[in-house]
Length: 305
Image (tube, rainbow, N blue to C red; front, side, top):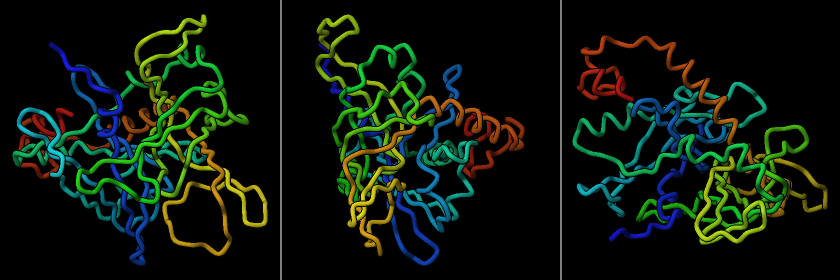
């Protein structure tokens, strides 16, 4: 007899809490999610996707990965810290300077751990969960959404789990808002939420395009949160990046529960950039030791990813 698994139970394992250490020692947080690019013939390139402004000028980047039990389940309460010096050097940015997305390949990290007898548990998102044009065209302007991340840096540190926020689409996710590849959501977008994946989240039931009530779940990746309109204490409306630093600033701004989300289709453009960047790196012979330092042969390590 099969056991039902709630979709969000799986999706909470798709994100990582991104801690940025600034050159002056300050710390700030953001959100990233694990996404597998160019999945082909059982292989892929797993990356952490986040915002450019989350990683820029980071002296160090820190995130945690949950260990996997021998039966393949997550070992909640057991996770390891990954520390990357000069974080930005590992990141591959979206080619459009106005699209705040970046990919951090983690294949070498996963392979190195595996070669030392440790496997991590995570849910990797991919093209299969991205909302396609057919689905987007069938949606009304207002739909239920779930955003998963680390507002104000908050998380379940003991179990390495994120915070779940619920809301609705505030503009249609199929339409480019003001000519940009983004849309608005109505949800609490606090500091630390930058880089959070935003999902269409119809859990239990939803209404079909012809008005019929359908029983079941409809979950799809709509995009990545990156900014939010805020108003100053004097009442002026401004648009700023969702900050990663929760410390006070000179000019007071108040979030108004709206967030700008980069449409998920931009992941396809980022994928092309990842493929191009990694193809420029010289690969060793397939039977040579892998350059990631795992001690395994390249064909059984990063060459398999």
